Image 1: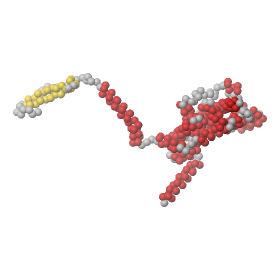
Image 2: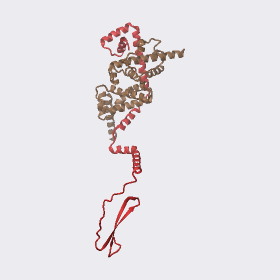
Image 3: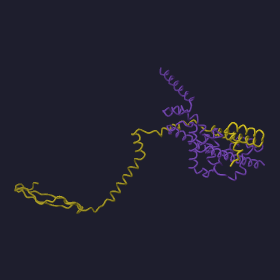
Image 4: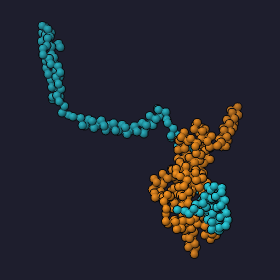
Length: 219
Length: 164
């Protein structure tokens, strides 16, 4: 009898969990706000990779990235009542994650404090400020193996300011729209566009530098 | 600042151009190898950044994450008053006791020692012990000198000597 009851409660619990897994974010947020731990667990599992991906891209340290991921979800839980659903849960979670990363880098003294001012003209970028076309022999993605390319990407990302790093990761990895990124970074769409342009341009230059180094070493 | 063409190329690549403008840019890309190369470069870099992020997430161990998050949430929950007090006492009890002891010690050490002599609020002008007794008033200074005095009234019965 007790075995049947246990099985029943197990089936009921898995059914609830199953329903939660397929529920949309806003429903899960509402359930979590009402104290449903399973609903919050589903949100954590749904976004843990994405949050970690951004945190790692920003911090380049596995432990720090995991700490920030953990802290981001704890903060989300703490402020669930403040989430009104005017933007997506995902955007809100990203804002918290990016801010935690920026705080972490500032605390560690690793943040480039002088961010590229996107509102002013930069002569050094005026002259060669175009997006770079890559040909077969100047395409880092073709000239390096995957491991080398990953390392090159990490190095290139680390040359960017934290805000540029954040927009690159949000756009390239998660495909956030300009409007969503503007909400995350609390700035205008124009600023996002400008940051993204300069971040991409700097990434390209940094990747080409790595490629040049590689060619010199090979020669 | 980026040129308008470059800005448009980027917005086209990101799917942020209105349909009509996007069509114009697409036509330009098809006829310009240079612009085609720029778009290819953006695609290539996007793929590489995505791969690097995905690789980092693949290597991460997410199994303990939920337990860590849960512990963090539990820590934030307000405890019942008794537990909070107990926790508070465990955490700060020794510090508070030590601080209290220091404050008391300071008060004792700094308290003034040359206090003015106590005022004699009661003045005994006369003593009526009746016709059968004799009354005597003694004033005895304390050990501390002038800081205090004790007054003794000694009554001696004339019929039964020594009773007080």
